[in-house]
Image 1: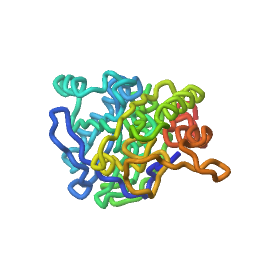
Image 2: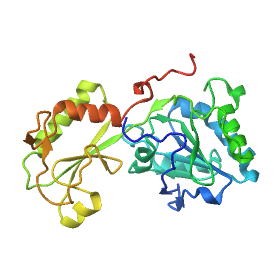
Image 3: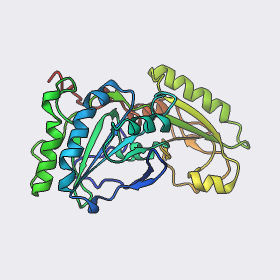
Image 4: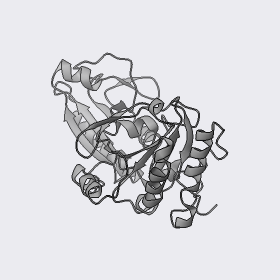
Amino acid sequence: MGTRLDVGDAAPGFSLPDAEGRTVALDPAASSATVVVFTANGCPYALAWHDRVESVARDYADRGVRVLQVLSNDETGAPLDTVDGMRERVGRGEVAGPFLRDADQSAARAYGVVATPEVFVIDPSGVVRYHGSPDADHGDPSLDARWLRDALDAVLAGNEVAHPRSAPTGCSLKWRIELLWWEGCPSHHDAAELLAEVLEELGRHEVTVVEREVRTPAEAAELGFPGSPTFQVGRIDLFPSDAAPALGCRVYRTSDGRAAPLPDRADLADAVRTQLARPWDLPGWVDPRRS
């Protein structure tokens, strides 16, 4: 897929609101280790692993480990993943530590998340030391988040993680594509139709599309809008461009090099397929429950 964080990479920073609207920032240097878990309120896999993640948060708290749980699903595809849904779980005492809302999906996109749950262990220098699932089987509570615990023990001891990667498994992340457009360019409706057709062809009915009009140069600068139409996920362009933000018609290049007002259908399909990948779309993915 596009940007997908790997072991050894620097973890992107983020500042996200919790269930009460308080901003919480990722600060690896402030902890002996940080666990970032992209999770969900309604995914059965995330719920099955949830108590194990909570147990890790409690067991390692006095060793300086911080566990951040992040909800990134679009609410249309995951209606339980609202701020109200977060508050209900916090009120019931189900979540230990910060419970954060990644409403614009920028954190999920920066990390290249494909599943809920998906776990990252980050050392104090900000480097990812483990990435994957909490353990080998959501259906076996006796595993007790073994992979996650082993990774934390290694980081806390200053050792290399023996099993630094595992295949993410669970529910696919529910993405939202924003189609940004400007009224002075006539390609907006064709772009919306093209995107709908591509999503239908790919069977990606869970992807939400939001059409957003860009009205002013200030909005264009804020959104990184290089012209109409632009396709963004998590505030990142599906077709990265060096063009300066502007209210104008965007120029795409076809496979034979011609200028065009829209991307090639095949190029748009490839961008969706690779940059909004699901766990089973990843090259070489093996379901760890069957390995």
